[in-house]
Length: 279
Image (cartoon, helix red, strand yellow):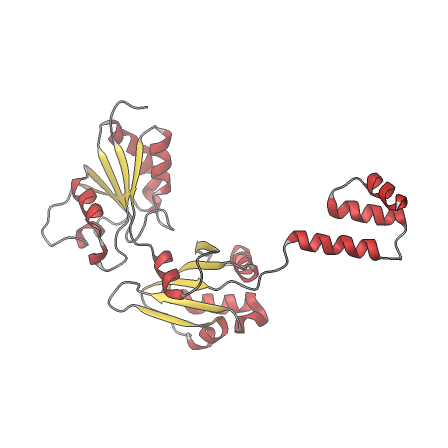
């Protein structure tokens, strides 16, 4: 472990309402030796105009790797380095992970001061259960990777949370409806726009309903919560059903039946055959 006591602190900041800044987050920002910021203007918006802040250095996604390389120098000097993303919690579709990896690899302490996240806020507003949730972040914008991502959401029985730019919401709804097919009229979806801000809006309906209703770009930041589909039978049940079908198939001779059961279960065909002819 390094002898110096430098520490990296990731701080969650308000999504839009600065009243959501916790006292602990406020103290961490003001007492930092250095603030790494996704946007250097963001910390100033959280405090009264003219308040003096520690030195700020930009650390948006394209610069995170470079700042991660420089981080050890600051930590080895015993500095308390705070990272804040533009809004919400770092790492959640925002920079921060590489900074943590660099600090941990060098043996320095990492701390997190929790704060608001758009994903958690939107889930609470949606009314969907939080027992089975997947966070997909920003989906690929085009191509096969986007098609595959939407197909996974369509087939998933988990609630899925997606971030999207407001102007791209109509396209997301069209593509999601296409992936869902006939289920688009049943799958529930909730869109949270400008969460915690003055013009917060929550839009509810099925994918097909919102696809028809929202044809123009939305303004502001958007979080989309997609209800889960109907759970499919677990793999164990599917295998058990297939084994039963093989056992009951009178057209299969014992050796063929043994091979079929072996393929489904991973058992040795010879052992299955011996058991079959013994009964």
